[in-house]
Length: 391
Image 1 (cartoon, rainbow, N blue to C red):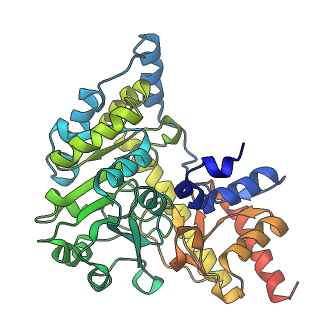
Image 2: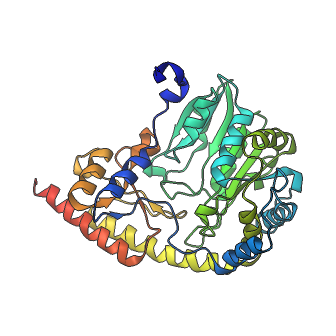
């Protein structure tokens, strides 16, 4: 059988995730220390785990309604109202299998072949492939360290055409750790007003901000709620990555169409995780605060150390990544990461995995213990010294 003729040409044209390559190398190499995974090293809060156990014991293991448990959707609505003053009805929320499904639903519900999707880069790896699989055209909005990887109104305005359908706005940002404040979002909103461009605001790291900065959603700004789809979830803030629980909210006419995709592809999100999610939102703000405090200490340490080593690193204000510049080494992002893992057994992710504007940088996660980070930094410094000595 000729599988090359059977497989979709579109799926064959999609490149595998640039992140997975280095995960695989790390997994197959003995003694590797990884700073590559975007996953909290904290356990899921006990009260959340206990609810899940109770849910199993009470045999609550059947399908829920397609959009999710009504109690969970109401809890999400209450949270958005309390935290950001955003009022949504329960029929404007879909509980998804992680934030990733929510992103997929949003893009596929909006994009027709030929539509252009503006994607802020560097950014998470899934936006472009999903757009391409939907027949859309990816238009990168490149950001740089000069502006702390923030999107500017000038960059946005310069890329809008009559084919532009969606802007993907991923802040706090993976991989850079950059954020956008209310004052920085206002000019973006002004460009978008009076257009038919939908904003997909990926806010999965919204609870993880530092230095006194608080997250602002573009949906909070005047005239933007009606044109914004918010994606969020439980993986990062509540250390619930394997629970695969997220949500999407937005204007009812859009959510209704997204729900059809969810019905046919998923049916409903994991029931046990949904009950656990209710507990997380209602009673785990204290756990988030503890994690944020620890991440902040790690963040300050790792930024200081990279700058001391000569790898310029701007101070990220969100998520749990730093994005140091490695251009001074003369190596490409992939060469730097490949040699580092092969020669010094430290796994990090090349910046170009997150878009071409990430070339010359590497993504380093600080979702690890201080001791783990210190050992990795020690090896990275040894690697840099070996490069200086021409080894």
